[in-house]
Figure 1 (cartoon, rainbow, N blue to C red):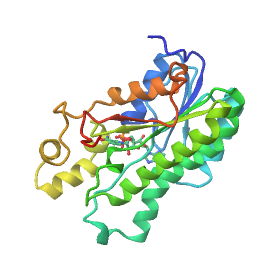
Figure 2: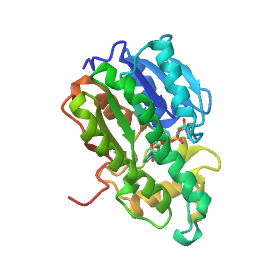
Figure 3: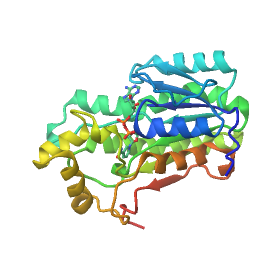
Length: 260
Ligand SMILES: NC(=O)c1ccc[n+]([C@@H]2O[C@H](COP(=O)([O-])OP(=O)(O)OC[C@H]3O[C@@H](n4cnc5c(N)ncnc54)[C@H](O)[C@@H]3O)[C@@H](O)[C@H]2O)c1
C-alpha cells in the first residue's frame, strides 16, 4: 500500500531504538524525509534525505531548537511522532520521590507537549499535518509498579484529544497509539526496565516477560508485540490515508486491555 508519504517531512523522537527506530525506518522506506531526534546516535535507518538531531527532550529548550533546525533545513513539517519515553520500576506509590514524579512527567508528557507546541505553527502552515503520540497500555491498566509513568501517559491522551479538538478544523490531526508489551531495548538493555522487573521477580528477563505475559498482562495473542507492529500503525496515522482519523486512541496490545 502506498502511504503517500513521499517527500513529507516527519520528525520522530526517540529514533535511536525500539519503536522509534522501527518508525523512522518504515517512514524512510515509504519515501518520507525523516528527522530522527535522540540522545544517542541513530543508526543508518534514515536515508540520505533525512537527518538526525541530538537532543535531550527533558531539556526545556530542546523542542524549540529542534523545530527551528528542521524548518531551516527543510522549510516545512508534515508530521510529528512523539515517541521518546520510558520508565523505572517503582516499589509503590509511597516509594516515589518528588524528583521521580517530575522526571516521569518531563519525559513522558512535557517533552511531547513542548514538541507539539513548537511544531504546530509549521504543521498548520502545511494545512494537513499529523501528530502521533506514543502512549502506553499502562495508562489504562493500573499497577503498583509504575503509577508515575501511567499518570504521565494518561495525560498524553488528554492532550492529544485537546489538540485534535482545537486543530483538526485547521487540518492538523492528533492521535495516540497505545502499545502493550513490545520487544525493544526498554526490556533488553542492561539496567533497563526488563532487568528491573527480572530482579524484582527473582528471574532473568525472559522469565520476567513470561511471568508478566502469563499473569500480570495476558495478551490474547499470547506474545509480546514486535516494534514493526507498532510502527505500522504510527505510519498509517501519519499518512494522509488516515485523514478522517483524529482524536483517536489506537490500541496495539494483543488484546490485553479487557474492558469494553
Ligand atoms: N516497549 C514497550 O513495551 C512499550 C509499551 C508501551 C509503551 N511504550 C512506549 O513506547 C515508546 C518507545 O519505547 P521503546 O520501548 O521503543 O523504548 P526504548 O527504550 O527502546 O527507546 C526509547 C527511545 O527514546 C529515546 N529517549 C529516551 N529518553 C530521551 C530523552 N530524554 N531525550 C531524547 N530521547 C530520549 C531513547 O534514546 C530511545 O531512542 C516510549 O514512549 C514508551 O513509553 C513502550
